[in-house]
Image 1: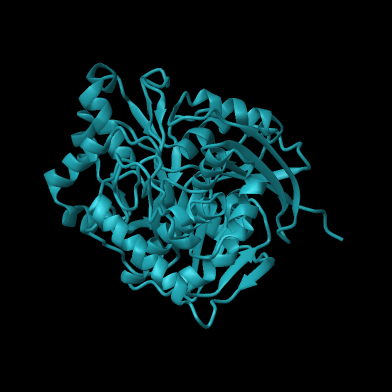
Image 2: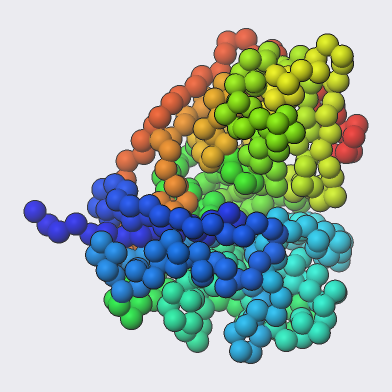
Length: 471
């Protein structure tokens, strides 16, 4: 019997650093460790390294953690890591969920026109994207912007440090496509846009192919190109035509793989690249599972009791509905919005209905995103529901009816880290066939024959969104 080959996948997310080790040939997960990141929308990148080490990263570079032969890094997208000539951050990294650059996003869109962004870059600027954060730095801290020599993303930064900070950093198409200064359509940087935002030239990472290697650690461990978190999740799930992933984590995301060119001038659908040579049209919401957690806190209960309350309510929450824009929103583009509770009547103001209204608001927000994806011609055969929020029985109960298609709940795994590990196995084998790993399914849900209640709720949601937010 041949010796087991082990690869590692790293998921450096908003909340934590997770590291899994996986059998390169079968996809069997062997170990999992994690360490938390500080909360907030800006962070010293050194804290990512601290968490990486605390999660066991110090054991990976030498290949001693279960004989690790290769590793891949995935991380939250868009974060601005702006470094000076001494490779030190000039400012805390502004994360994807930091919306202070909303005015710069609007100015960039107006300056060049939304159609140009969609046609030539693939995305229309919103406050999440790196280019808007560089523009914020230039506008608000020009003395710091003047010191920027190199701009990295969170996954680039971690890979670069694992490899000992080589002269040239590396990234991949999926993560580069979330910057706003990389053209998905031409597979090249738009340095003119970066310079216009930052006010000066800056170095950027080399964009590697899907199965290429970023380098090899001193201990002989192959390091793959890495990927943005959603693109890595797509690799981990092995999604195909008609599969749409709805992920409910800190944020909500809706995405699919396609070969079609996406150019949405409305800015709703971001035409990102995937991590396998294709496209990854995606919509993201800032407000994900934390909507449920915040409502539970308001009710004075833990998340388990919150779920029980929601399940005890009627499906439509008696007409009560939460518009879940608690931290502003990206889809729709409402960076300064706050949440709203609508449909309040004396008869429906119960803890059960309030809990269910929060679940409804979250799922309706994601259903809107799913419809926008359909509007770009993306086939929606089934939804793969992942992320911490997908484990909520209250979410599971209504998802298929609200989405209008079958919902599949893959077995609970760290799919972002798994995708990074799968990419590592791909790079380890020199870019031969993409590793064939099975997808385990935990639960499946079919839409009810009569979904009229869901249609009524979605109509109320759309009406409230238009009336209150004009979106």
